[in-house]
Amino acid sequence: MAKIQAPVKMKDVLNVTFTDLTHEGKAVAKVDGYPLFVEGALPDETGEIEVTKLNKGYGFAKLIRLNKTVPERQDPPCPVYEECGGCQLQHMTYEGQLKMKYNQVRNVMDRIAKLPDVPVHPVLGMEEPWRYRNKAQVPVGLSGGRIVAGFYKKRSHDIIDMNECLIQHEESDDIIQKVKDICAANGVMPYDEKRHKGVLRHVMARIGWQTGEKMAVLITRTAELPNKEAIIKGIQDAVPGITSIVQNVNPDKTNVIFGNQTRTLWGEDVIYDTIGDVKFAISARSFYQVNPVQTEVMYGKALDYAELSGNETVIDAYCGIGSISLFLAKKAKKVYGVEIVPQAIEDAKKNAELNGITNAHFEAGKAEEVIPAWHKQGIRPDVIVVDPPRKGCDEALLQTILDMKPKKVVYVSCNPGTLARDLRTLEDGGYTTCEVQPVDMFPQTVHVEAVAVLTLTYVTPK
Image (cartoon, rainbow, N blue to C red; front, side):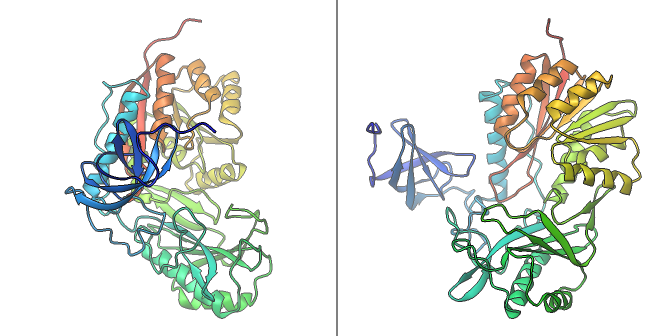
């Protein structure tokens, strides 16, 4: 193995100045141009670090002490923040977080998209950046002879037992703790992933943000749930207003949370919630945005950018359960939504019916295959909206957009890096990026969403 050439050695103790934050929230310190990534520090702080790992172009170090701090530093309010991997930025003020996220988007627009002149607006943040998640799902295990439930410790599968999580809805915390205690009292053994034994793997809670409806989901290894009736009665008594109690069975030795079999133990199969004036039915396995307050902000921005007058045909690629499609359908002539997950398309159709929306058509399949088929059928979109997963748009879909030449593309992104990459492709194909609006969907974490709008400015010659 070739020796790693670096200006530092393992276990070196160094005094450094931190210059930046990575997209994972780690501070960056450079020694003769060689970057070291360090948890727990912030830009412009100085401190003492110890080198822990060396790679060819970068290394890692642990923070020993800070010598100088910045005004953006704060004491994290969560008692298990240092151990838990759920949040990365609680040691930074919210104002500092928004600035960091703006810089993240601005940097990739400059460096990857090569669009230094395109406006990136200040991040749309939350008035109350805590307790915003409407869904919580935590693993269950055994520690010291007692049942525990909480998030995994950083870089491990050791469960941190916790009574509350400061970014989850308070009632989610309550449901998880009560379900855990009721199962323990009724002899339900937690899952042991090393031995693939035990019953209860995860507990999930879903809350209807506007409706207040509540769902408890028990994810089990076995179809049989010991003392099922006593558990159902216990949850009904312990959780006032519970709407739905569901069991999902996952017998596989896997890190995937859900199995294929889901059954309602008591109450309704779904809970309902609204975003803006659109109502959604949410099942145990439905994809539904976890921050409904900021989802309304983000979808509102996408709708603004689409500038619909009522005469447009719109295609929504990666439409999921129809979240954006149904917003668009209220303003457009016709909306076509495509999504690779068949169950999501079934949910989209049900949600359209639930809202009395008849001008939305949904189809299951790959966007890069379904949309060209629509094109052959004579469907000519005025606007295409894309909301892809973190890996960004499929190359074939981007080519399809360039072939179809809609007047406008609205790109909703959960990954600034792949957004910038795809904007570059669309720019090279004849589109102009007009503006980018970042939205903070996940305060206290490193993630940032963004909405960009592009217009067709020239047609590339054949």
